[in-house]
Image (cartoon, helix red, strand yellow):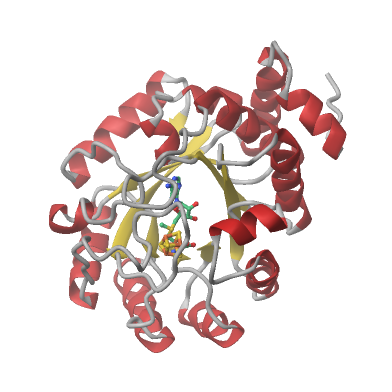
Length: 320
Ligand code: SAM
Ligand code: SF4
């Protein structure tokens, strides 16, 4: 099939009654462009402090009831070493927007990780200045994740009292220009979102153009203004991942944790995904990094890595 990937074409594809030919095409394109590997990344959520007020997020600054934590550089390094020891080769360091970690301190942490393990370092710490992004790149950071969240300006504004879509996209272009492997992405099922908005989301990924794209369902958190909203659909999320694969054949597309929470069980891997992240956040902190409600198992770095490798092999794919 030759799918029409224009804005109107994407809407029509998202609306299809039978999407299976598109999943098959996405799987074929994935195999041809990036092969059968599934890259397993270690995800360390090192601080749940955040200065922003994103309407959907359980870490938003106005939440006074949430105990906040910051991992020390030593704690971070010790978790990273544990992941390295069982075969992880990429560490994703994620946090709220927490200026306590200055670019100098974050840079020092990145340097230490590089020195101790040589792992690829991905950062996901929100919007920073060009100077800060440049200093972190200089320190050795390889990749940066900053989802655009929604490509519709009005919807973006209604969800983000302290930011604009323009600034978000500007950050993404800056990251790209600085030589980061750049990851964006968006949530599926945000209240007020239409299929046309999702088509714009998909096209924006291509416009940056992104090297990675995290596409996950919106999950309502009871302590946020969106507590009464319905969760995003797993099927619609999988459709967006498949279309992202057609638009960006060589991109790294994760099966997001939020999709697993919606019961995906790995189906997304047969429709274009080729990356998965496993939380290695210590148990003392893990449940406080509650961006949305989820039943999280205790962290067991070696056992969870081994289980994931088995699950990937059982799908006929190659864990890396
Ligand atoms: N603070 C950084 C940022 O916003 O880019 C990184 C951490 S933030 C918790 C990571 C991602 O969580 C966001 O990009 C957003 O897409 C996702 N997220 C937050 N709240 C969510 C929710 N209720 N449902 C699904 N995803 C959510
Ligand atoms: Fe903070 Fe990121 Fe959550 Fe927004 S999505 S409130 S920036 S942690």
